[in-house]
Image 1: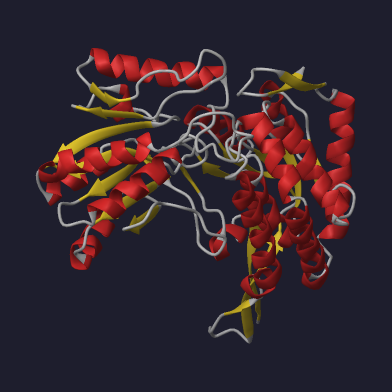
Image 2 (image 1 turned 135 degrees about the vertical axis):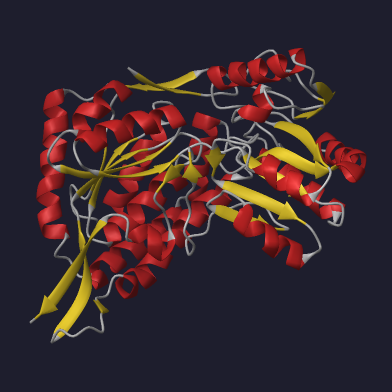
Length: 454
């Protein structure tokens, strides 16, 4: 049984039965059949439907925002921006997919030579709960615009969102079978990957889940794109605008409802001389935020999505304190009921502590100090992850000198890490491989075919 549960009230909202093997076979067969016709559809036709999908998302922004608030606790006032971003994604690929995937002429000694980009087939997506709409559309939109079809295995705690996503494609006029949701347990994913009709897999989620999916896909020689965890460094130099850096520190750490984002800043690496000032401003900013019912438009911070995430954050903070970390602000649950945890600022952070070594998927701000540029870079790279990084400094030359030395797929200066439909997104090291979004993302699931005439 798959359950939809409200993390603010702990109430079970709705239950869904997992699909049977017979139903799964029907859906995969339907997807396979749909691909044979969808791959022949013109870019003009695909773009027409994709623009309709964008319009549908804009028209249903309020309802979809409420749905993700109910299932994963995202505040109602922050929800619409994410839905509208999905709509913008639809427009971007509707406008640009054809030009990105047009045949690329090569200047060789052949009579004619070019590269063409052909769709692969059925792309299976294993998606997380933290951005229940954005994560799915950012895979599905480019995959479908390039002529592939999609099957979705969504996180088990956002089944109503998964259902709503399938309905959005159906209501926008996409042919039957081009995009389908599967109410499927994680234990059955490996068997589905092994199905010869599945051409490739994309997963956004934990390092453990990525490793398991990649192992199965690798054994079947199938393409995989992985976007996994992050422990993003947020480096603040003494010459930075401290007020601006502090503002972005809070926004980044708490983005997506108390920091449940792979690209939230998670390690705050601050030059020693400004540590006290930085902490003061951050604590002042945090103290202004209202924690409570995510359906209240005045609420800034809602609950963590599940009880297990709450327990994990508590354990990581408590273990770090036992190893010498100090809590400056927060460090406890907010209410007896619901998965609420206070934003927490910690100092005296050392390697070996969970808040230094691990990805903390909650509102914890560990402050790590450095003395010079070399040490700042060393600490920033001292993680098994490599998704994003932020650098705050008024010295542009310094920033450009540091950027090539940072092990990350996304680096921003004087801003927080965020994704953009027009730019490639992904990581290195244990944060995964492959790219989503932009021109690079849409080419992940195509056959890059070399063609020439003698």
